[in-house]
Length: 436
Image 1: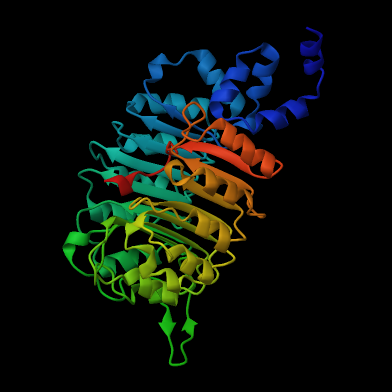
Image 2 (image 1 turned 60 degrees about the vertical axis):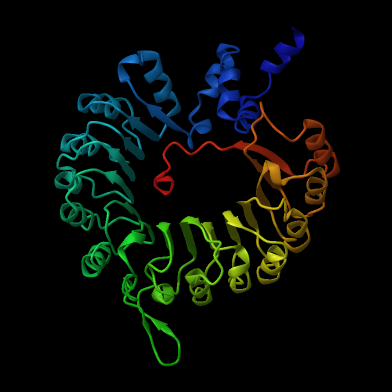
């Protein structure tokens, strides 16, 4: 009892510092212990990055809304609610900055309600069963900085694109709509009306043939005879979903020379010999690239030797990574700081030994649990700069790697490495268009 009383005498700041490291489930367990911890756990500083999912609003009582107001949650995902419920959300959470609308009965009155959210910066509209003139009310949200449109059925494309082009404060646009490419001139007119746009995500249309070489020349970049680029720097981040060569030409990204972040999510793995890899040509022209994400597609060996030297963050998922490919990649980007390694597993080959030897500056590493042997894990412990190890597909209540082995790693590194058992949970507000 005395020990418990002494714990309550600790300054609240210390408890808050402890609680911020807890996952959501543990916070909720601590919250149920007593009124003192309940009050501390509900402090807004512990929930600023959390997203709450709202559905069936009739099931929420006044205490639920009171708790949300205490935490001042700024991000919500709204699923299957009716128009009349929006007024309740806006009234209770007027400081919302991010709203995701998923599978709801939505019409233009929804945007009228959302226009009351003066802090709203991020709007995601996804998987709507019907379309009811949303574009006509888009102008009510001129403060938006991020807009994501995903699978909005029966929408009139021309109306949507015209409405989006009026949101001149957008810095990020996800356009994952339609069954055919946007005509080049329409596409350019749209993006040239967004002067602050820096990140663009497109869901591609691989069954509709190749696009013009200058389809992505939206920054009006000109390459002169000396090889220098002139013009607006434009986009610094590009994401291509549902992609497959040869939809974009080998020179398509020459018009985005200042790109810093590139994500290419292919439809499938490429295993046939002789298939052209346009990613290889793109990487040769992207000297400013610092982040690269590739899902599926060609084996790593096809483009490992042209990885830009400035890369600091690389994510590789679903493709084949043959023996020696990581050695080659390590020779090209020896200063890489963050790596996600989650390849297609074949022949039982693991590259973790190569990673520990040739990526000596890594500060964080994400890896699938079945790629980690006992020998590999201890080898990672010898990486002097490594501070964070995320084990994908493993959870605290179901981890294939023994707790004894993880404890041995912590002892070996004097708790220098934070081990996170991440499972495969998706961020509630994240787009899932790459899964379709």
